[in-house]
Amino acid sequence: MKVLVTGAAGYIGSITTEALLRAGHQVVALDNLDLGHRAAVHESATFVRADLRDRDALLAAFAAHRPDAVLHFAAYALVGESMQRPAAYFANNIAGACNLFDAMLAHDCRRFVFSSSCTVYGQPQQVPVTEDLPRVALNPYGASKIMVEEMAEWHARLSGLRTAILRYFNPAGASARYGEDHAPETHLIPLALAVAEGRLPQLTVFGTDYPTPDGTCIRDYIHVVDLAEAHIRALEALDAHELFAVNLGTGSGTSVLEVIESVRRVAGRALPVEYGPRRPGGADSAITYADPSLANELLHWRASRTLDDMVASAWAWRQRHPRGYDDGAQ
Ligand code: UDP
Image (cartoon, rainbow, N blue to C red; front, side):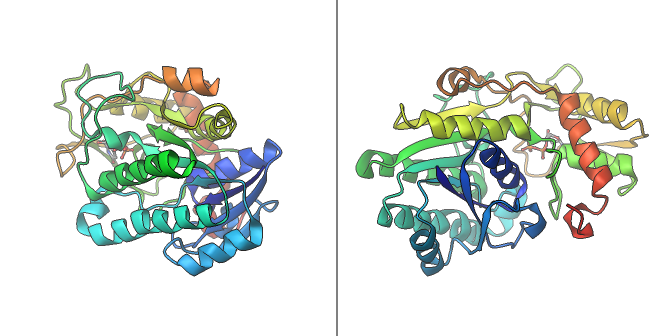
């Protein structure tokens, strides 16, 4: 299949592109390189530099390449920033998706796999989180994910767009070639690795008074390569299923302190920690982990890699790319 991947120069887009090529698909890798990295685009993909907010550029890309399916990763994805710049989030994430749907329907491209997030559940009222829990927006980023899910659902009902909604829990780790290089970095595992490398002086643990065994938040970390493989399965599952939404997680939770222990163990380095208050905004739920059974069943897929695998792969990637993609190494 010829698959157009938006955000193909980003963290999850680049690693999913690699998995698609390995599975024998052709990839049109679309990215505006605003936050993505040209060096993260696999040489066997056809690269198109375009911005989703540029409707004409998008239509031209579809006319030129005629993809059979779209995997849509491109989006702004920082909760805190979305509270400061809501209009930018709506313009990029929502108006960009509108243009994408228009281009797909204009060119009869009817398979859509959407990069959604467990953020659509807000502060989930129960764990493990199942797909039938209500969608609750706690910030413009979450609102944008919910709106694009809803837009895709309407297009599925009204225009026959076959749609897979994939709600990621906490992606982490790297492939042998591609890794996580965000500026600014806000996520726990890359920040902990930066401290272990000595690039940052210490890691702040955001809150030790949560109602969990060690007082720190519990999340469901999933290896980015497991996640990438789930996208291939989702694309295949669209043959049999017109519209579905599934959680992508491991089904087990890990606390912030357990992540820190894993980084210390794998990297074999000191990792100075400061215990701070809860993260500003107050939106961090104490415990979030997926019930992945629907994904296991529909996609014939299961996350198989451990937390130590995630940390070890991310650590290895950082060792090879000490300055991220800016070092020019492949
Ligand atoms: N966290 C932390 N210190 C940091 C970054 C994150 O204690 O410097 C915590 C955060 O409060 C959350 C967990 O680590 O409980 C995972 O945070 P991340 O931002 O990686 O993902 P989120 O679950 O917020 O999407």
